[in-house]
Image 1 (cartoon, rainbow, N blue to C red):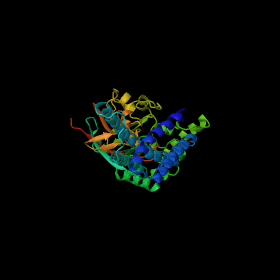
Image 2 (cartoon, rainbow, N blue to C red; image 1 turned 120 degrees about the horizontal axis):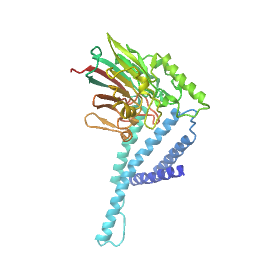
Image 3 (cartoon, rainbow, N blue to C red; image 1 turned 180 degrees about the horizontal axis):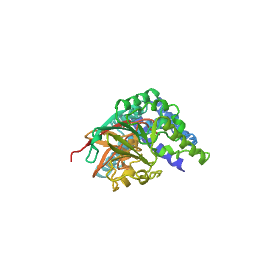
Image 4 (tube, helix red, strand yellow; image 1 turned 180 degrees about the vertical axis):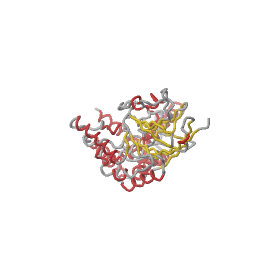
Length: 405
């Protein structure tokens, strides 16, 4: 029944899209090609989903199948909206002619070629964007820099620089040269510390096998610290036993240590400058609707409200549901997880929109409430759709400044 409903919707959408195509071109050959491509992509998409092996996780080729399906289906949704709008107008005109003119029959006006051509032109925009996102956008790294002021920041840390990356998802990578460029871009920021806020892999520790050499090159004066994201636990794959799943997580933890990263598991470390220090707090994943292993109380045992704290929490919902109102005073929280849905429109000063905002209140960038600050990194990698459109992969640089009292 589930597939029947999906196929029925697909056919309905395709009928409208085909009408726009036929109005614009009467070529029988082109019509046959159109129908063949539509049926082929539907069949390939269904085959991909029904043969997906959860013990192996989603393969790169399967992600591209999803990407190409979206590239052909999303424009058809645009055509559906425009053509359906024209149909409403045609019905209105036919009704008016039937009841308010001398016309004695209900006759729909013919579709206008101009409307079909306009609809096809508009639909070409998401088609081109989704193709671009798969082959260029997903590696279009950008550096976003913020200066954040805090009254209680120790004076010795005035000007301290943090580089944050998140959501690497190494199991999706397919271009070592582009990844190397991203690594170099991170190191070029010459920050005091590099913080990774979770989702190193899609499911399996072995996904990092070909990338450990590159990510081992990340260097900062105070080191590289990391936490776990929801995908790192292997919860989205089928395992032959609980032991195998546990061993996979242990291997992922060891891998990070071998790369020289300091993985924080509901614990904290101190960053020191002269005789001052700030606490770097790392909690395991805690997310509304996702794995909830994070324990901020355990991670901050021994800390006081007066200690300046930078919290690494993969899912931003932990900040909104627990951290921002906690009396222990968590001044800065760094998260990721949302990817900005890898799709949206961002024009600084004018618009920032993504469908993910209907799921997450805090989905990208800086959020402030009272004296608490959250940054949600848009992610270094990608998952599912093998690309990015409008929401580009991000390297965040945060400079801490002491606000004068």
